Image (cartoon, rainbow, N blue to C red; front, side, top):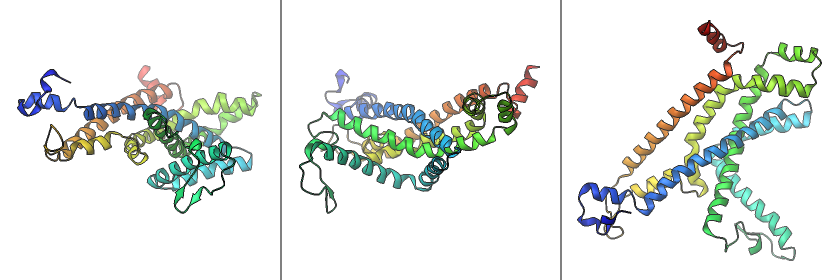
Length: 294
């Protein structure tokens, strides 16, 4: 990146380090930071949407819908995350390819299951074999977002279901006495008030989601952990212009600092959100705010 990086072996320590930290692979490491942040920005609302749908279904008066909601919460929460990530992504990918295969290659005579191999026609591949590299990466990232959203959506559904049940029944009955329909009670009374009960659990889930981003490595996405392990390993002069020993400890220490700093920023933001949600509410925090303002 710098003009003096032509021959790293002749450079003093600080220039050598400057050149080393701006190599192409290190740029990929810095890019992976934005990949993780973008994953969180997309996955969090998607998981919340899955959670809200699951919680709403679980409290439904329609029995089959309630079974689906409660089953989703129980099954996904009961499966280890790593097993779900390894199985679901493969199943989802093969399911998409099978549907495309059935639609695009109706004359295909061979079975798609051939021993341990899953074989479909070239037109059904996702993405296509001649697709550019960015499309392969985008497809893998999309599978990661869907998987994260489904897994953490089940935990969010459990939190939201409990929050909906925590809203005082008297308030719902009062709204009903005023002539509000069940739909109006749900959207105008229950949903606005449940967030104050849900936020502690959702904030904890957000922290778990932050810590779970290294699972991207299992899905083939080159995340922070991948690059830290790749760059920190022993490098010899035969294969690189920047030989060094085993620096993985320092790379993972940098990751530790990054995740702790991000966690602290999240805590501050969530505390401010809690203050906003409890304002005027009949809760301990809301009462404390009223006394402080008096």
